[in-house]
Image (cartoon, rainbow, N blue to C red; front, side, top):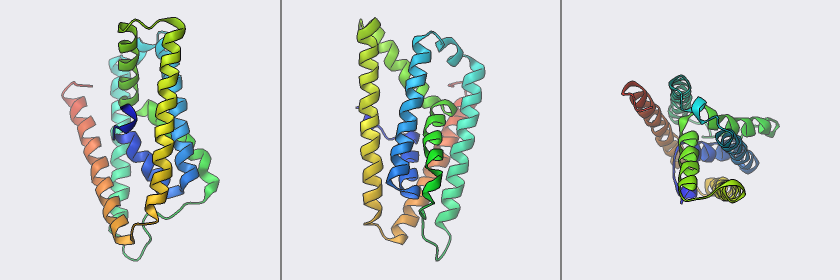
Length: 194
């Protein structure tokens, strides 16, 4: 079920796939997997108290809000440009950046941490311990990775069937969606929800 949830990570994954191609999308998904894997290891080793501290939540919340606002503004401004291909393919020499973007996304926004901590707590409550717990969590991460890779591949294929005007509209919509996510994070920070 979690693989079908559309959140900021999914939006950025699709955006990266459309912008840099299928390989970049797959590396972005692999980066998300690696970041989530590291978060789960840290949670399992007892670092949950660090991640639940108000200082970390505040830092990751404001950082995530800034990242999403910046991506949103770039997308919106790019959607208004005339006679320019929307989401031009960038050179593939920056594929390493795609992996690092996916990896860092897990640490600059609270979404991955909240999701993984919730899954971990639920698994413990359900009675999973030691090796069965780790097998369950790793299997979950593999399933999420597979879903993300499929999304990256479909995003690349879908872009071949869309016109430039449709792509501009989608880029503008995505920009407003990213600004909305940023506004929600800021509202959550100011209201004490994060």
